Length: 456
Image 1 (cartoon, rainbow, N blue to C red):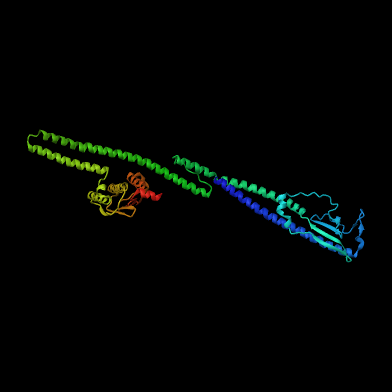
Image 2 (image 1 turned 135 degrees about the vertical axis):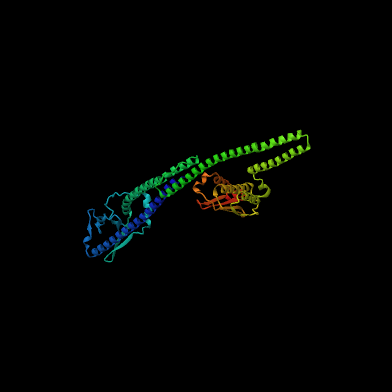
């Protein structure tokens, strides 16, 4: 069930509840009005009849005969307009002598529906028939019986109520229509949001949401547009970074191929020449000189191969561990950059670290030192490498020229560092401004799988 339908049903249910409560109070008030009307009419009639009886006891002129030959004592036929009461006179033998309902004919009334009559519950109105003994000069003549009849009053109440119910029904329908229109109008932008999310799902990050009129949806639209901007920028940076990585890989391969061809090729040519000289040497001294040359060339080749392997993968990580490998790399960097004062604190107790984390930490420090050499023009450098139970902490600070962080994405080194760190669920923060030095804080998990399981 959609949220729009749920809201419409909730509003309809609330209106129905209000309608039911209103109907209940209307019926309760109507019942009280009927009871009060019938009771007051009954009391009034009884008082009038008491006055008539007092009058009759002093004046016997009331005994007269009707056209049918019967004596009319109270002339109840003249009270036929009192519809809420049935007034009967029974003689001493219990025979009905007069009634206000005789000769009235059938008065047409609009009969209320059964449910309304049942809701009125006439039996609980608290009105009962009332009897008045008629005694003349000590002689008991009979009984006057006044019986309340609320049916006419209920019919009048129904006539009034049906108009009110029609008004309430029209109001109910109108409010439902207004609520439906308001909810539909409010949720109309949701379709735009869903469409925009679908396009983002398909990789169309240039989609943007308009400025919604609804305050609640304005923040959603702003957040969506900010997210789309970030995704678009991130995708653009990833594409550019991928191209730069491919370009750098090709440059590195060309450099390796050139070094192998130029350096190792020359060494092999020299070895071949010296080996040929040994084979054709007639004196032992000439052969020794060629052999010595081959030995020196071989040593140079070994250094060359070691350097190439170090560029491909730092073997010192496998041999010494992360802490000592970083210390050795910083030591070699210090030898090449004696104008920079270095304060280093590299813990030798970094604990067990995953291979991917160790390589990333080593490459990140290597890249930072390379950037300082090329760009920072620094005079002082501080490097701190420590560990907690689950993380490797790397903090590097220099007093160099700094740079504009907004242009950081244009530098492959920093972008590549960030991608390496984030790829291992780590974090990297850079604090820098032009001419104010640079601080880099890197946090790496020791064990990538354990970190992912904790995130799950």
